[in-house]
Image (cartoon, rainbow, N blue to C red; front, side, top):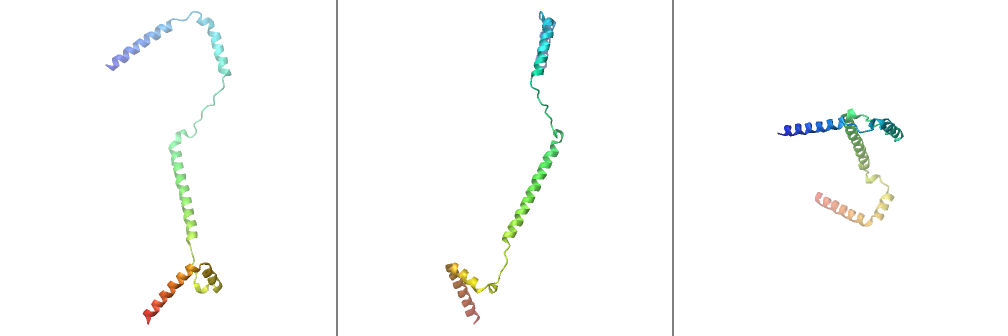
Length: 135
């Protein structure tokens, strides 16, 4: 059904094309050369368009794969660097209190008097409790 309607439309289009092509307008060939020369001059004066060059158009899948690998490698490098930096910051050496000079301990206590008192009181109570347990 559809094929018949399409074929009818094609036949009609072909008939109208034949009637148009059989008739040449009056004076067409007299003006043809002038019209052609005007079109050529207009094309020469028109600004030229730069050709579009498609670089790597055939290798899109390789470009996508390369960009993903680059992104992953960059992420891994930055993540490892961040881990090393945090490890360096977190690394704390244990210092024995006996090795510190008394002046430094007194300065700390004076600067943090309230906190130091609470800590000393707790330490004294803990030691007293352990002494009483041992006796």
